[in-house]
Image (tube, rainbow, N blue to C red; front, top):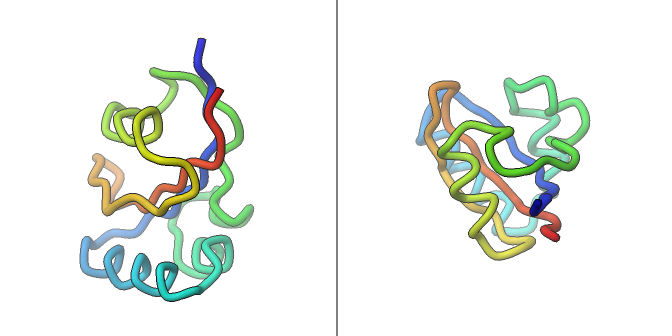
Length: 92
């Protein structure tokens, strides 16, 4: 089964998500932005989610993680939890 590693951040609004994405694109460190702004407990680890397979995350998350290019910030991705920025760090 395919496994991926990714990091993400979670915020409550699409506007905030877009603002944070632009900061990262402009050179801000993803992990620092996640630690400062993410409402997910993974924010304390810079958004690191570890390794997981298809079906272990919500559908909207899986669709991005198992198709997006590696090491590029994706999002905003809306789920029932809020708005995410995702970065797939590996897939095998």
